[in-house]
Structures are given as structure tokens and as C-alpha cells.
Amino acid sequence: MQDLSDSPVAILSQNHSGNEEQLLIQGKELIYRLDRFQLGHDEPVFTWDFAFCQKAYISLPGWLNGSSKTLELNSSNIEVHSVAEARQLYRSTPNDLQGRSWEEVINRLDEDDSTFTPAQLAFMEGLAACHLTEVSYARAEIYPVDILESSLIDSGEWRITVTSCKNEDSEALSKSLVLDAPAVRLEKVLSRNDGDIETLNWSLVSSSLLAKEDNGEVILTYQDCSADEDGQLTYVFTSTQAIPYYKQYFIAPNSLQASFRQLSRRARALDTLGTHVELIESISNPQKSAYKTQDSVIEDSSFKMLDGSKQDALQNILKIMPLFLVQGPPGVGKTHLVTTLVKQIFEKEPDSRVLLSAQSHATVQHLYHEIEKTELSSSKSDTLIIRCSKQDNDDDSALSDADAKAKDFLEKLISSKLFENSTSHRLKTRILEMSQGHRSNR
Image 1 (tube, rainbow, N blue to C red):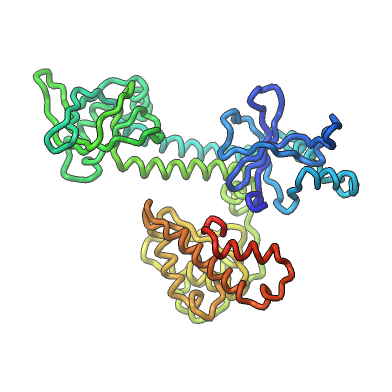
Image 2 (tube, rainbow, N blue to C red):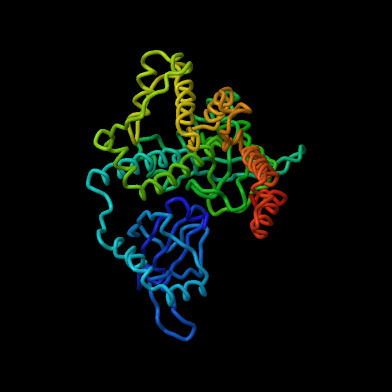
């Protein structure tokens, strides 16, 4: 099953009623709820020799709590059968099921509540603390306001006048971060307006939390500020949308949406890291985890184009596992080092798989284009290079790139002798459906 093909994670937690433990498996797309398997239609006998799934979630259910225990599973040990197949296997080959019970997974999850060593726990807590600090600073850029006026003007836009107001949570957050009060900071941001898009474009939201609005944010364009007779500052915005009713109003720089997406990705990365103890050990204690291999460098023309320090770095990257870090300022040749490394990997092992990632789409695009310039993308090369990153939020060419190359491979397979000589009508039909159907089939 494709969804469970990449190190799925077993989760043991109290169920929604809180009266017993529930086993789940988290795959790449879905979370599967597992229960004991009933051996027969009329037999009230249940076993963990098989796990029965009758429900799946598209996201982690809300009743999971922080005390849930997790365990990474080996994908090759998981088989998927129909109910009838499972019952037949249990009757015909019960000995083959020994040592493969889900009860052993549950026992391993129950063995030790402390998944991490003290050092690993301190490392994860440090990452979490850094992340929460960044979340707090981002939240501090969401300012509470009162709507004084909202009126439709001749241009068909809405003119909205707001003023800062007190909000207990926002004030407490500012104090804890040793920042000025929200009203003071909002005045500083808007009074320095010099046409910068960051100060011009704002979002009107209903909460100081970094979360998407159910009906989408109302986009505001800053126009002017003024003070009344009592010295209270008011700010004028325009919008193409009418103001919805909220119990409380907040405004945030529209640029904060990018920070929200980045912080959301980081939170997901931290959640995933928490299930990979070996990776945590490699990052938190790289010297202890490192070991040398017998791999050597191919001293080809691209290697000789590197200066001495990068040649040494390339040799160490190939020889030291599982992690090696190279640091350097922009413009010193790190990209060329990466492209040379990728070439070396595929020259030694043509069936290798390499994932290149970066903090920004632009960096990934740059790497992609640099590798495309190498002989790896030539017509003589069998290397498959797929662009998975987007140019922007509306760009779906990354999906198109993967789909076009998948379709090309399928068409080559269909025109091959292997396909022609196959006696499996079912398999050939499936391949044709993949080639001719919607890209979701591929």
C-alpha cells in the first residue's frame, strides 16, 4: 500500500472516551485507526495477529494528546489483506503469523514512556522553545483595533476607520516579550509609511492567533492617519470587501501570511522529527553519530574545477555518514559543490534517489537549473530529474513536470517488448488507464 510505504508511524493514545488505549498508524496521507481482528462472522473471538481498519482520518484526530506514544515501523513488515484473505491465512498458515502480531508493537510502545534520552529531550525542547518564541513574535504583529466607521465610497470601495484598543492577551504578550504596547508599535509602523508594500497592505482578522479565517481575510489598503481632539489616533483604510461581523477585530501586515506558512511548515517538521530518534541523535550529537565509509571521490573534470577546500569538503561528504554540514557565505561556490556531489552519486550508483531541498523556492529553482546544465539532463543520461517546487502559490508546473515525465515513461513502457509480451491483461489495462487517464491516476 503506497500510503504506508515510507516508514509509517504507530501511535498509541487514549481514545476519545479516555477509557482505553487506541492504536493508529500515520501514513503519508492518512491516519488509520486499528482494532483487533474478528476471526469469524459468528465468532466473538478477536486477535491482534491481524489489525482491522474500518476508519481513517485525513488529519490527526483532536482527541490525541501530548502523552501519545509513537514508534516508527518498517514498511516491508506491513501487508494489506481483505477480511476474507486474513481469515483464510489465519486458518491455513497460523505458524507464519508467529512473531508478527500487532500486540508486539503495542508492547514496544508500552515498554518505555520516555522515548528520548535526557540529551535528546533537551535538544527537542530547545527547538520547541525557539519555535514558540518565533510564533510569539509573529503573533505580536497582530494588533487589536476597534472599527469606528465603515462606509461605501464613490469608487465602489469601502472606507474603514479604525483605532487601537486594549486587548488583555495582546498586552500580556507584548509585556512578556519586552515590547512596547500594541498601540505604540502600530503607530510606529504606520507613521513611518513610505509607500512600502509591507505597511500598505493589511489583513482584517477575528483573532490574534496565527490561523486562517474561515471565510478568508479582508484585505485592507492603508491610506492615512489623524488624531482627534483628545489625541486619539485613527487610521483610515480602504477595501474592496465589506466588513464582516467579528466579536473582536485585529489587523495584521499582509506579509505575516508568509511567516504563518513558514511557521506551519516548521511545526510539521518538528512533529515529524519527534518520531525519528536516530535523526535527532545525528543532529544533536553529530560527532558521536558520525562514521566513515569506504566511498572515494571520482576525480573527474568537475571535481578538478573545485578549489582545494571544496575538494576536501566533497571527499568528507562522501566518506562521512549520516550527516555532514558545509557552511559558507553566498557566492563561494556551494551550488557548484552540490551539483558535483549529485553527479558523483549518480556516476557511482545510477539507481540512487536524491532529494534537494532549501528554505525558499528560489534556491531550489536555482539548484534545479544548475543541475539541468550538467550531463545528467542530456539525452544520453537515464537520470530522471523532477522539479517539485513552485515558482509561486499559483504555479502548478511542478505537478505538470512530474506528470509529464511519468506519462513519458508509461508511453515508453507501452511501446516496449516487455509490455507486448506480458500475459497479464489486468496489469496491461491498468498501465493503459494510468497513461490515458487523469494525472491523479499516475
